[in-house]
Image (cartoon, rainbow, N blue to C red; front, side):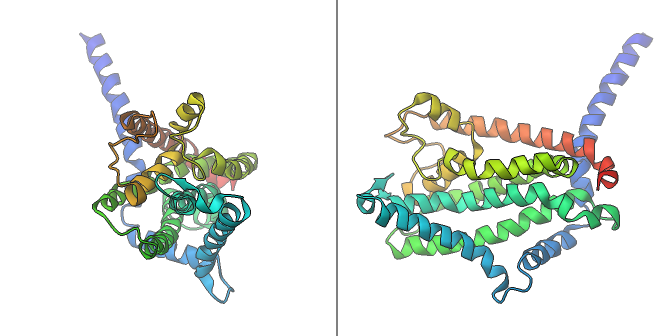
Length: 296
């Protein structure tokens, strides 16, 4: 009898630990909501302090990159001006995929460095470490909203008018924010412990642009192996999701006639990855947060 009771107690204790771990980060945010949003705004201003146009530089960089891509694919490459992808001019196809890419890239790069860059919050100020990742992600999302507004206006000017399919952005954008916020729960503490890991993240970001379906249609690649691998890249999921919502007039549960990939597989794989990122992020954060003051 005692053995059964002890077994049940251990089982209940195990689930209690899991529950406490899952709720640890939400608990840390309690009472710090206002400060987190204020710090997100301040972070955006601080990054461009001393510049005449200030935070507007956060928009100028991706706009210049888009101009370079437009010139390369429309003017520089022979036949590029008439090229189409997913039923629209190639530049529009590229631009729509580039909008979420900017947020994802900036969030990974800044999120991996945010604890080391804000060590004063860890060592000197009583402020939850997890809130550092949150306000860093929010500041990048502010930029995304503004950049997306410019892209949305451009689409209207070239004749791609708003449609009911655009409502899917109310699903894709919050999901993208949540996914990459949870990813920073792992990246930021690990980068704080190892500058090599931080350098590794920085190094792979440039290559990820070409491995995420930003500049090509991942559904129509010749290699079935590559198409399958790209299904496991969450960046590809969001690039294609934005295209479904903005230029393809497709719902998230619909597929493409020109591609063999079933959308149910695409969505199921992403949801599985999302759950994994949440759990591994919470695990890494809870495991490393107490040692951060000593490391920094």
